[in-house]
Image (cartoon, rainbow, N blue to C red):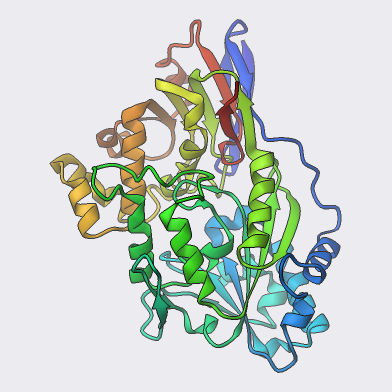
Length: 423
């Protein structure tokens, strides 16, 4: 037997496979991390893509909002970048700390407490710069226009009438094609109504299924992405900083400049790192989401399925290691079991589209395509109606999987691997 160890929560889980098993491990391409983050950031800000340098974009006396990601995206380690970015804005651009506010792009998530905010920005930054949680239900949100897709763009007032700098990370995204960039605005600092209108494009407009025009790395013709771009363009004074993480989740590159073109360059690099060519689809995939915070909940952790499912044969077996200490994530996630059991899930989702509801729907679609077995802390009875089997140990789980004469792909970090069959 050969032993393997995959990340699970804050720790790891070991398991063994027979020596004669047909096993291939899939990893993202080896890309060196940045040796000097501060210098790389400053170089990027001084020579941005399709935009004047940040020192010319910002002027003394400007009111500036720095939009950052929330804790669910802490894997991007923006805490290693923010102190240097604040230094640059203050020292190189002449913006005093009292003219700068940091806005956490929570989207429709509930913002964290002071301890969480300190973790996001570091104590040193928190103690000198005001840090604010975006609230998608706040009464003072501002309407700035309507997109050609009919989405009313209602934004946090801190990104209206001020200079705005966004900081995010490019990564594959099952709905928007890629995360980061324009997503810092929509859904990041948008109203619940705006987010719901945009994300409703995730459903096929006619058939009871996911919209075939969306998907990982799909940008051309993707209505969610194009709608987000139109919303971001309504923020008149916008400068974007995008981080790229390597397959070991270390910062590998920084792209700055125009909210769209600089971000697209980052997406191209992400695709180069994470895409892994395979000759054929597997019978079985065993994968981890990469540990906490990637597997903090089903809402976050099942993004791994979005990444890797194209490497699995229809009806194949998908084994997932996801702790999910926060259960489904948003409390609403498992509430969708009721319309699922009643057979009214699609109708209810069209009537009142929510992101947790759609992720639940998507996970049910995936469970219908494959046999999904999950090592997780989520109780089996909660996952059973979705068609997912839950286990408390890998030994118990693997005893239920037929591995004989099967092609098995092992993916230690499903958040950084996008397999694709190549001729």
